[in-house]
Image (tube, rainbow over all chains, first blue to last red; front, side, top):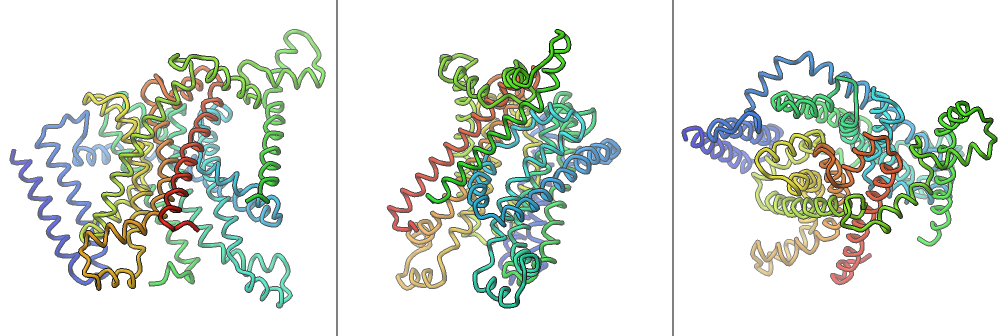
Length: 279
Length: 288
């Protein structure tokens, strides 16, 4: 009972502090502190509720148990991280986004291809592409190559569509100006159209960054060597070792956020001129 | 629109050509193997015919998938466990339930975020962070846990769909509810409109274009959630279960037909929302 009361008190306290902070003039500090306090409150309430309601650790382990498990099995977690993220997701991400970019630049030269591929690409981008996973696992074997292939297929079309759209983002006046400078196709591409396309390209890269991790993990459900995050999650669920599952999820969350954040940071450096980056 | 019909058809036609060629290329080793064992010499036409008609090909030819689709949708009774319509219905019901739940949750959160500054500052960053987490990875756990509590069947799958589909709705609705400009809001104030009147007469109507765009994304995400949610349930029913069973037993034609079915389902669902969007926006006088 006392745990439940504690949970209520923590929740009320966190919310009051946030309410007070939110009414003050917004600074960088408050805009960082408020979500942080909210997150800490949520974790604390979770901990208190698990003990208070005596939820079995098989259903929902408390954050403290997950943290100890995380600290105890860093070796396994690191091995899975290397297998899934570095070998599967990152290599697939690089290959998929790179090839999509090159093909987008290529089809941009031919309006016929552009008009044909863009609707098809938009359509495919909305499909449940993840369903390709069992087929690709069958083709490329159980190791990381098949995971990378799934990632390539998943990130390819969002990236392609965004890059093609970005390359069209310049207006006639700007292109005419390049023509008056007697700029050829390549110098127009590098000096005007690619820089103008950067906000779109980074939008595609950001979407692809979350897709890449999902693709690599889900592909492991269809068969994998005895390591990898997806493999660990599905087998640990079978063994009811939910604390290890949650530890993997924490890794996935950290990696996902770091990946997305990293792309966003590069975007800020590259497209500093864009209105959405001004403050 | 009309001028893009020919290019699109060309691209789709080229895809089919590539598909057939790839089928020959990928299935050829098996055909050669079989011919060597029976001591025959394969002519080119025999090779092509064989690669397009294998039982468990590496890549089934389009017409094989089409025949399988026809047999499992039209010729089987829809109550039969071997009917693809039955499996599609299982997936579709979870998708729709999750989509409705996700849209409801997303709208509620968006209204809260727009009207409550504390919520805006504390919840919004976490909504965005929640999507950088590969939620599909947690899908098997959610299903096992909910099964252990005694919730089984539709709801666990729908929960995953909900988690995937609420995000685009929140982001779109927050943008939409904030889209009226200062002039319009001032106008409401000069009419002495209350907060709820401003919401119902100005903010909500002007959020509609944003809502429909996010509904389309949410629907596609919801279908993916339902399919992945079916993977760990031990392959009982649904398109995801068909994919898993197909990959266990090497039934590639079954996998491809399930995949095509899922694609058709996604296209139909998004198309329905597109039609609703056009009708609604036209009646509201917002159509472009």
